Image 1 (cartoon, one colour):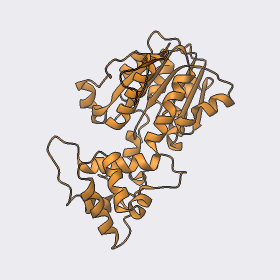
Image 2 (cartoon, helix red, strand yellow):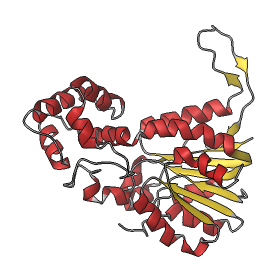
Image 3 (cartoon, rainbow, N blue to C red):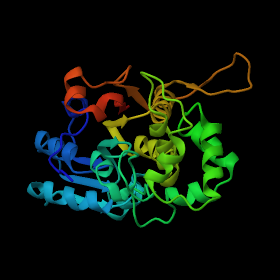
Image 4 (cartoon, helix red, strand yellow):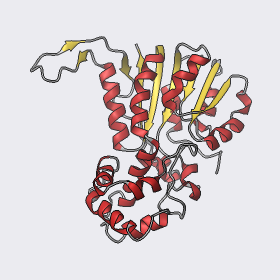
Length: 309
């Protein structure tokens, strides 16, 4: 693992908080500490910095990287959806900034024994927090064909979801599927690969990872909490890596910024509400060609930012 790797959309993230005073800041996905170190360096006014990560290895790495600011930094092994619990324990009411960098990290992908990558041999694990119980192998070997198909369709957006699920269920009758290479061996011959399209194995592995880590559930939980905790003028920045995440972030942000209430079933009538935030990014910030060339993982990253009214 390389704790000195350059974080995705770093300059865009720093611009998001430029000119904003950040006495209290939360990094909900501290990772290797790249974004955190840059923010702490640019904002000496930070008095309390809370960093969370559900991966204990990431917490250990970021602790070393953020050592120069150790007097103001608190690092916690926890999913970001529970950040408010830890703020309450520390008697922190409001926050001035928060960052969420969603998805799997490059250091997790590069660790074969974590099982995140279909290009490396490893156990079918995919847990970002290794202390949790359910693994990708549990899902692959116990879920029904229908449930697997719906998972590949809804969380992977893989068009060949029926074929993938059928192949898995047929193959596991001969014995359990316990490794990434075994799953690749089963799926690669039956899934058509189209030029300029996302590799179907990427999407199947994405679906499994999202399910194992309850990523969309946790994201849905954290966004309203974060908006609620922001003080006036505070900002929330979220980096997403696939359409399911980005769609959720966009919809939550737009609703929070709107002065109209959803009135499904009432034809042509809208109820007024007070907007909570304003959109700083009308369209998401995306990486430059130079960043994509130096860090291919950044190619699908999108950054959305809101400011509390």
